[in-house]
Image (cartoon, rainbow, N blue to C red; front, side, top):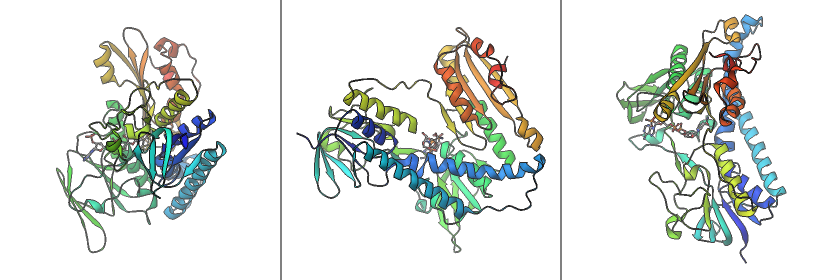
Length: 446
Ligand code: NDP
């Protein structure tokens, strides 16, 4: 008999969910974690990032408060206070994750584990453990392009621990992390330059949303350099950095942050030895049941590089556990997964962009609402929101919803239910507006 029914490698969001659900189905489960329980999302991703986004937003709110009658005589920002409070919250959440595992009788092994066979795992301490099934949920790590001085740059792993708030930040990349941290650093008073290799930000998002974010960001004073590639980073005598690129002028910086994608954590896991197949992007190849090329070994989350989002990893872990240990097989539906960029202001989307819809459906109708939120009007903030519905011209079904503006992710999560349910534009039209809100625009577009 094996030591465990299930051995999970990696206690991130997906691994913890799989372990907990499998255990609740009666399986004997162990989970190994080499770093901290909680994984990227809780420890050095979504959660601390979102807390920084909240912290950053006070810069605008405190400023806007004057027009609402508040006298805010002087305010200054203290980075170490926010940093340490955020790190404290991360530790609290890590404790809760451990507690959840413990209450479900999941054994937590706080060391690195690698595959030693189809049903065998070797721990860093040298011990070998057997399991009927093994789940790899090791996540991904920031991809850092290698060039002269690239080791002087930091990634999103280090950004939460900065000793002091930098005055000048250069960010490489134009995706999620680049735009989110561009907003955060800018709100905290830093001068931010975002350098991207292509000629656009947020490739894959609806063009009008990207253009709006770019426009708002530039109006606020963020700078962008496109079609530029890093060549060199040098350290000046005073410790500051000088970045040299092709395609744009040199840039001085206190911090250079690389946000150029994340790669699956497969290195040294023993995959080749056991015969687990890896794809072109370094991802573990899996079928719709998250099964790898070795029948007893499964993989979920970022290490499979399907959609690199926490709720997707969680759902994959849940489906795996129900299917393998609960006698309730189901698979994850990857259609209409909502997603958001927590930029300033945030963007949120579900379904097809206008371009994708035109390619897929041919006949497409779009509806947009371009408006200044009430709060911005009184505050004298000239920042406009943009909502867009993409509708199948043949069936009237809403196939895409895209928003940029305050609270867009909060609004879109609820509205995504309508898109997932395949509701028609006519259903939106016959829903009475809830006034005065921003979200009422969703049912008022004609
Ligand atoms: P993204 O994939 O979002 O963006 C990567 C950016 O880096 C793109 O602009 C890309 O350019 C550029 N790039 C890629 N490779 C290179 C390279 N070798 N040299 C220079 N530039 C390069 O990655 P992030 O790192 O921002 O985030 C990683 C993932 O984490 C996201 O894809 C997302 O799945 C997840 N995430 C989700 C968040 C959320 O849900 N709010 C927040 C943060 C992360 P190009 O467009 O030309 O490819």
